[in-house]
Length: 387
Image (cartoon, rainbow, N blue to C red; front, side, top):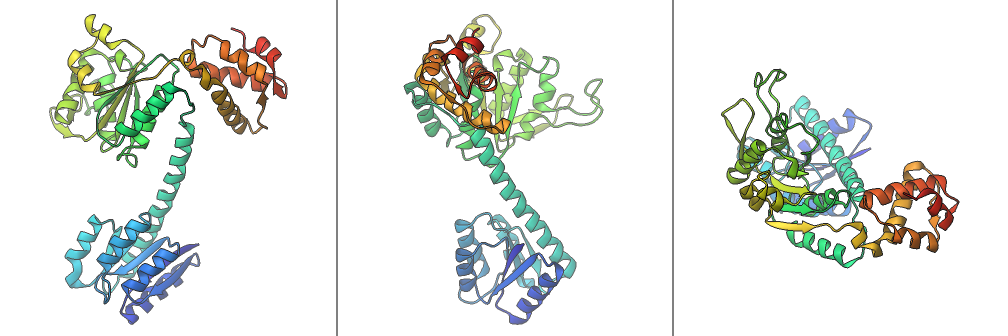
């Protein structure tokens, strides 16, 4: 059931709007307010899925209601109701966050279409918020060691800026997780987060993947295609394993960072982009520069902020927390009860040489949960976690 509030000081128009909406669908509950002040009070007290608000009203006009309401409940879509002389103002309200506007007297089809679209948009916003919470949970940063505290502190300081970040560390340590948190805590968190695994894309395709291509640029280019930089516009692009990127692609990435514009493969037309770049690598890029495999100028562009993610062997104190975290998560994924680990089992796991880092630990925990006893003990670890 969708709750709709109509804020309109002209009683005749208010009655028409309420009647039209009430008769349109039995899933609409329509309420009304006769001026801006009463409308804003209703928004503060109640949860509405949509507000239709007149612009010119006594006591408090529609623009003031919109601005105040967006500060309290920014997710509520507003459709502004404008008289002929209010059209310029109505257009300006779009910049303040209004979903759309309709003119008086309201056209029935236009009104109902706009209402349906606004309610659909509200539903998408709610779904995205739920999805974002799930994503955040998937990328939860677990650990209380000094090394992890340093990373968390750096993320808190760096994320709100637009500074580029280079994340280093061995495979399986959680570099992707750090990148996600930099984005989640940034001003760009509502915009796209686009991941590119540079090691997984053939060198001859990496430029097309990053910058897109135009039809006919190469044999299989049967139509124009946008690249990852365009997809990440106003958001964040995460260039994972950037040390594996070809030198020609590195040159184009450098240009994108310097000039904030890219060109699709096969085109000389520039496309402006506003993208924050977060990169990661398991390689020693300074050594790669010495060997001629990585551009030094690109390194200095990327490494404004350096975040080093430690190997699991360097943060063994976090292993009990990680085991409990993975045990709970895996049980949820399998739809089973959470298994506990005995203190001796945890001690043994803390002594292991985790060459595969956190990724390897998760796999071992999953194996022990599937094959071990109701409480995973030392004998299970010796039997099933051996290398």
